[in-house]
Length: 221
Length: 312
Image 1 (cartoon, one colour):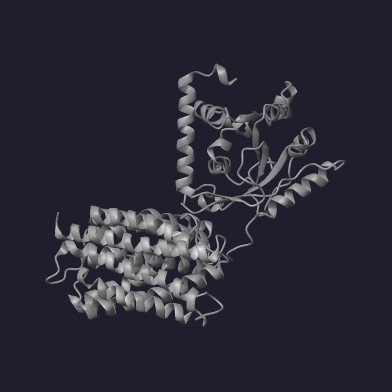
Image 2 (tube, rainbow over the protein chains, first blue to last red):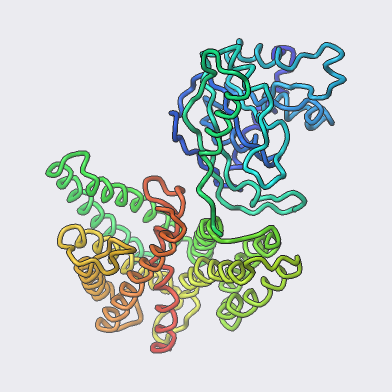
């Protein structure tokens, strides 16, 4: 798929990517906290909490460039293909794995899991948001969708890394226009795997707990 | 080359010489105490970021007023961001926090740049103090309201108002002291406070026994005495940079270093309350901008006002 894109487009995508990473780092002073893993270029699935549209660029920006080149965020096709700008930024700058969440897409034979597994088999790391949607509730996490379990089951040797993004809601609450330049932290926890014979719900709960345990202790009153 | 610039360059050379001696001492300690000794490692990392800061600071001083203003505006921005990351806030405060970052902070430095003393000394304590809570209250959330507005105001006072008193030293006009030497007065303040800090750390580790506030900070009376006395002596040696007499310079250095040391403990209490070790991780191996500048922040307004009171 990459090869059919023209050379100038690829250069443009690279430059836009750099600019986004710089901007995100300036605005949020985002810091990676490598709590459970080392920042080395190994194939991994980073699964993260999702509260805002800035989440994915945030994780992406705080990865070292060599890791960033090899990571592909899993993202919603209906969002990233909505207009031309998004269609450039999503698939080309971030190199997203696009999945269609709408039920009517499945009827036409689209299998989101197949795209994800293909990307893993091509050697890419992934960023996924297993809650499926942005969390607008007061709970730390929404219940996870099955996707994380399915990829853990299909490719059990790949490390699944809980990744907690702190502070993003305060930077840009929904409905505000001006972002606040507060400091964000992305904490990477210890890898987990689907265990032999572990059923879906047990695993998803374990994965969810591993992620919540990375959240900073509540909280400035 | 003006006499101020050549003074500045010889000062830079002397500082580099002193830093070289300190680095050499650190290396000796490293050989004696071993590579993994945490005290020596801390000392060495501090020295290393010192080298970087000295070069940056000297560049700003050579550029002159504009360089100093930009450098400290940037330091204020970084410090305000560190501070407000840890304060209580609600969504209702979003606009007032945005105003703090993007309007109040730049305006304060513009007023300092315009030498508008009547405004920059009251802009944050009066106008921002009254305006920002009004902006917050309009959004109708009274939950922990006083805590929210008080913490925001404290952040602005400390990281913008106090910090801006460093470049504000340029605006003080003293008889018989050429205006362009103001940058040397800034260098004087920063040097006595920061060398006091460094030597406080050193004496504290060597001779420190009695902690001043054991619940809050590792600072000891012995370390502080060593730091303040050293700062006083350094102040006397650097009196030629200032409009003060030798005794006057020693007194000013002592006051600045003492206030700075206690300021450092005030910040330690805030960090302890918010359960963080450092304000951020923006200066490698060193912590945040506030960790680096806490004593200067406290010393600057006091230094500024005593200078205006006695020497103008």
